[in-house]
Image (cartoon, rainbow, N blue to C red; front, side, top):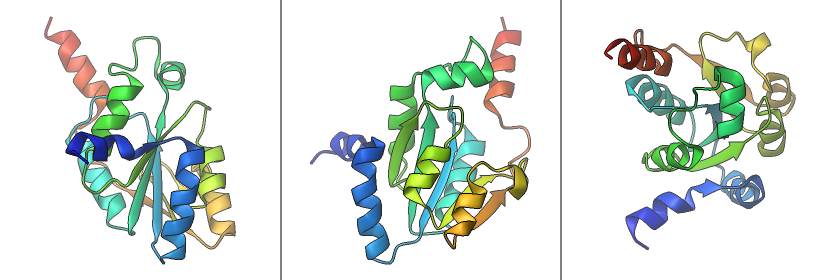
Length: 164
């Protein structure tokens, strides 16, 4: 298996992912889940995802589809398509699986995966994190990670537009 095959193998549908999750759990691995758009991967994303990965043994990332990013962020987004975004994330050595979702929230993914740890940015409080109740009812934890100041896709997009 070449390196690109390894990267491609990490991008899964929910149906493909669930048997893997069951094996990981049976093996005693702690499953960490986070989600987002991850449009234009930058240092803030890498810091956040590495910290999330260090909270357990397997990191699963739910990624918004192109359509759901547009609905959340506006017609000019995403800047990079979902195929690119998922493969870039899957290429990170500390990422174990990437799964797309088209709904407004990742609640269906969280309910199906039942991660041991649900992670979001510290701009959220536990009572506003979608799926927190599901995770806690199943004995899991919900954690937040502080972002690095000055790193956001919106800031990068603004800088590019202002440079014209």
